Image 1 (tube, rainbow, N blue to C red):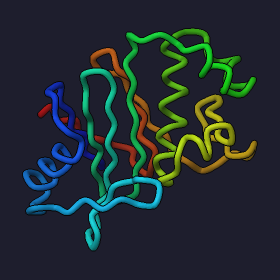
Image 2 (cartoon, one colour):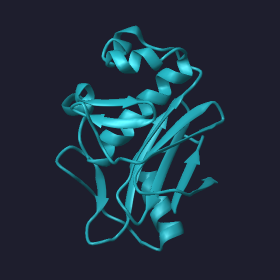
Image 3 (tube, helix red, strand yellow):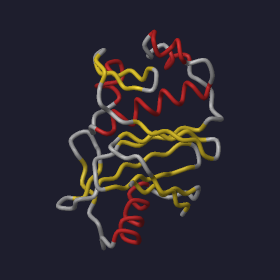
Image 4 (tube, rainbow, N blue to C red):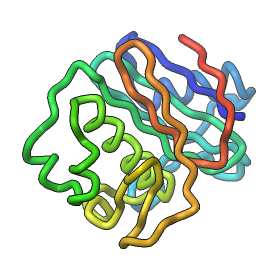
Length: 167
């Protein structure tokens, strides 16, 4: 089970993480560390989290296992320059703005799962027919996607259920 917290209130990313970890996970004054590529973590705690934001929403996924998490607004436009960075197989499935952001968030959640950067992995990762491929090889990555309030969300990790809580 993974918990997803979100808000439409303006809040700094680290402040949102600290608030959630303090109020819901009894971690007083959490010190947020960052990996080499910037993925946040709490040293010495068996808790995993990943933050995302798009337009007015800030959202945090928190669980007991590693997680990658991304969301994008469905009210935006597909960006042609970015569309050209998708593989031909992916482009064959991207027929609408919703498809564009479904593919985008799946790829980004996978990349964030490993604490990598988009620059390092974007062209090496494909989301095709609901699966993640790395360098052309099918991975065992599990992607869960859902839509809410005109946003598409992607969770990468070994999670089959999630709770959503508005803050």
